[in-house]
Image (cartoon, rainbow, N blue to C red; front, side, top):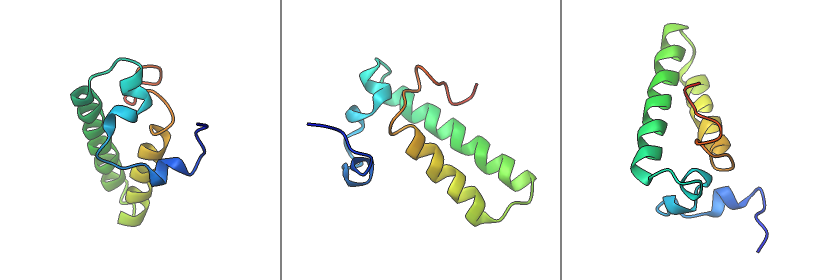
Amino acid sequence: SAFTPWMWFLRPLHQPDLSPSVRDGLAVSEVARQRQEACSFLVKLGSSLSLPQRTITTSLLYFHYYFAFHSMKRFPPMD
């Protein structure tokens, strides 16, 4: 079936094997590690810039949304 933009919202979060990164060959544990590292970086960066918590949280949401459609193998999050 076709993948629609709203499926990222409806897809169960406990099925990480559906992510583009895992389909491109990255291990689930590696995807989780990269996500944690990138999110920690975004939180530290936002805090150092004295951004509101809502802004930092929004950046995390967009980060996860982006990688719901794109592979970390093709687009490394820390590059």
